[in-house]
Image 1 (tube, rainbow, N blue to C red):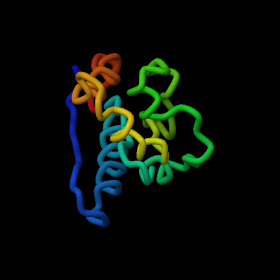
Image 2: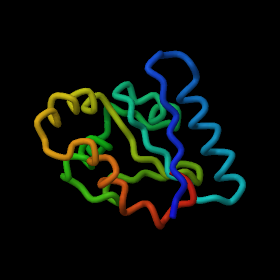
Image 3: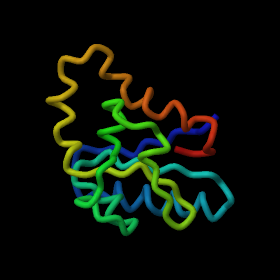
Length: 120
C-alpha cells in the first residue's frame, strides 16, 4: 500500500512544486515506485516535468470526472509517473459543487494506484 504525501499551502511561491518534484526524484532514485499528482490548475508540476499542459487531453480533472481510467491519464517521465493537470482543473469547484461524495473523488480516482506505488 502506497504512502501518500501531500504538500499543500494556499500561498503561492512557497516551494510546493519544487518540493514535490525533488522529493519524487529522490525517492525514485532510491528505487521507490513514485506517482506524482499535479492538483494545481496552473499545472506547474506538469510543466516542470517537461509536459506542455495546453496540449493534454487527459488530466486529473478527467480522471476525477470518471471519463478515463487511471492508466489512460498516466504519463511516465524519467522514472516518475505523473497524473498531469491543466487549466481544466479550475472548473472542478463549479463542476463538483453539487456532487454527492465530492470529497472522495480524488481518493476514488487514485484507488487503483495504491498497490502499484510505494509513494504517491
